[in-house]
Image 1 (cartoon, rainbow, N blue to C red):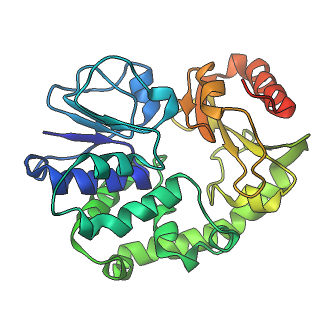
Image 2 (cartoon, rainbow, N blue to C red):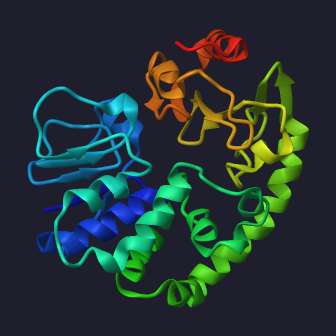
Image 3 (cartoon, rainbow, N blue to C red):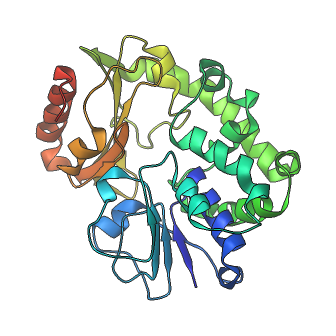
Length: 298
């Protein structure tokens, strides 16, 4: 049985749990893919696969997810619920004596994936090792796949202190801290306010700046929602738009997942993303921002 999941912190923890609870997965390689690959019909999903933290595919044998826009009505094996993380859905589904040792890891996956962070954790992620570690996992870099696999092994077998002492992990965490300082400057330079919406446009960059995805909420405190726009690095004829409710000014009433599902995307009530051809970008981006500016439930 092969685990198929997304290369983010929640996906990492999903893989840890599945390998713990389903011994038949332990010797199988993990397949790491992005949600859009399934949505576009380009994923190699096989009978026997366990799909986690991704949209449903009828070819899989088990499915676990928590994204509101991925809910299905047809019967399936596995579990779906609107939970703080997909890891939580898996953790609650299985009844095994091995659960307790991963309890704190799942609590932290909930915290990170639902953006239930303090301002201190946003400004100084190094104050929480789980938050800092989560920022070293970035699905934009496929060459990091050995690192994702290594984290699954380490988080499944070692204490968090041991994980953070690993030389590769420590180096990546140092890089994240330095990167976030540069990212703050890029956010300030490339963000404009449109009513209660902070719009960050990175399309002028050959490679969009990377950094703390929660930082905009502490920099633009009047914003109730942020919009980040960038080119798809794999195909620059496409544009990626990410929408996130502020975690410090919680007054956005627009369902981000439902909104971006109109543009072949999806996600949660408070965070979502979509991808479309650049020929439609000005029309679609203007529509998205206009809806968010009005801040009315869909």
